[in-house]
Length: 327
View 1: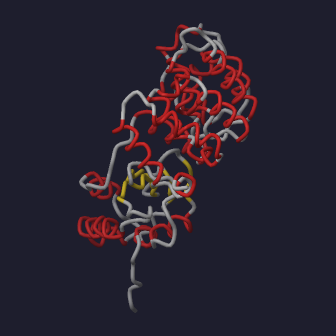
View 2 (view 1 turned 90 degrees about the vertical axis):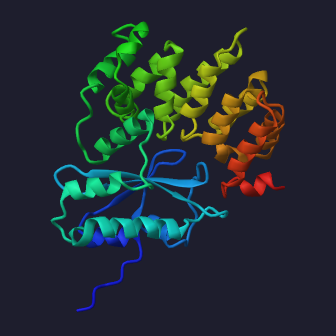
């Protein structure tokens, strides 16, 4: 019997009975349906949210009671498609290191872990991304949250005092963000946002950027940003945090209201504010007036021509942004 030809990473893993599940780890964390990922592997579709001209992804593999997780990044061509030579190189290395074990359902977890650890295509996410991914995964697998979850709930309910944020486990904040719609979490977060110091607010927003948060929660973040912009000495940490926190909210109108108010403020010339907009709110730059305001502020940014070139180049790499920016 002829062995079926294996041309993709998806087919290779599935042939070993590893039941891979795919996640996009680029500008925000989101599930990547099998057929969509396979289309990307076959260069039938573009990578949806390039970051630093690379595709960032996570795979979960069923190698035991708990899934094994791989974090991989592959270079993209000038169009934003996968450079298949890099994927083929990774696949060849994997086959070489695993041998026949990869094609057997009894493949040892240790062998798989060893193979990925040695790969130049593997990467270790930053703490906030790793926490967000694990929080999302426990929700999808219907597993309990981390042991830090209850303490985080108590903090955001106001029970512990707003100044006690340094004792909150980051994974607990990630769990709250991923489970914002459960129980009283949304109410607690909405009530807490006006009172949070800048640092825990920033942590929360960096995790909420992966969630399609409701208008009620996003509105409180908008209110916090508006109050900050109206103060004599607005805190840029709050503004960049809120930009990220509302970036995936369900209301495009609310996102664009925030963008407009920020872009009309002198703070919009700061490189960190501009980077937050380009990195997380790129889809809202489809609005011509917002795009013009953004480009004007980018041209006057506080870091100079090098930053302008870098950020514009990054945006032009996004298929959603390219047409508007090239007009």
